[in-house]
Length: 388
Image (cartoon, rainbow, N blue to C red; front, side, top):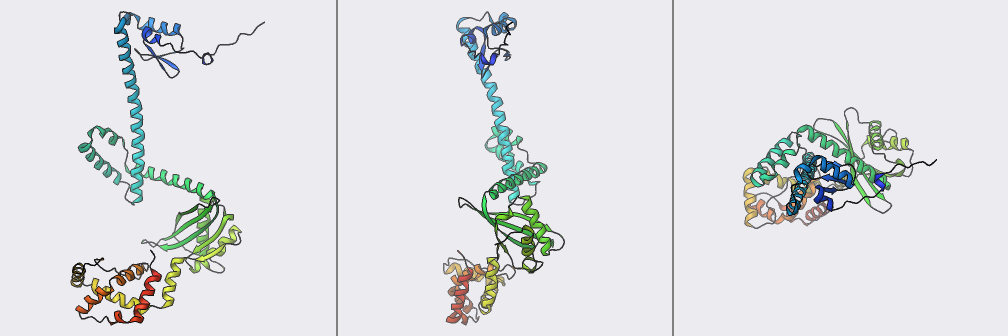
């Protein structure tokens, strides 16, 4: 007794006959046959099925069209079908472009730290621009969603994408080091910032801002250690690859028994980790140890005389214009933001002769600008604090 096998149309490899287009008003669309008149899909690519569809639905109307008129009608229907398909494709592309623009604008809002509600204002600006420049693209702006909820969601999605990307890059590192700094913001909340620097087997250096943790209570070495362990767990960091830790040298960081470094190294059970002091803080400490107080005292005194009084400041800027100076003004120095020391010293050094002339015209004592010993100390301090 023989067993009959069920025929499978997919394996018969039937081909579309171009003559069917003229005879039955059909066209091939990928692996299907589509009727140009009603745009239905014929189930099987077979002349019998195509003929039956045409005979039962369209023959009464279209049999009267013959010769060149029939050919022209087929071409007309083909163009109409193609146009409809392009409309759907164009609509899909517009939706994708609108979504992409929504992400790009949300990213720009997040980068500048603007409120999420600014997205609606940006959309209004785009609508005004499009109406006056390219009105035919107005539908594209209408499709861009920039409500505050959408911007918040887009920002969250971007954050997750960056986190996933950073995890992949860290995973490729064969060794890495971390740098920590803890400071208090305007609301008196301690913010712990963690940076990471790693190197891959291909000697690609990766240096990124890893994460920031808000510490609303105490900031002991144990508290900092717990926050750092949470961050390493969050980014799936292999602690065995840690080779260096850099801190600001505070007791809570480097305390012998309860400091962060001691507790963290005990927790991860890793040896041969180099612990160093932040190079920027080292520069500040060195400047204090070298004791160039006379240099900074004289420089700050001159700068404050020029900048603190409105009349003196206006006259000094006018004097800079008269002598065609490369710099229009001097820089303030703020002891709290001690990194401004370098910019202040560099600008003062460049303008020392002009400043001397101006201060002498005001009857101020600037004899130190003629003292070679003071000028040598001034030049040395300027050189060690300024970095190109």
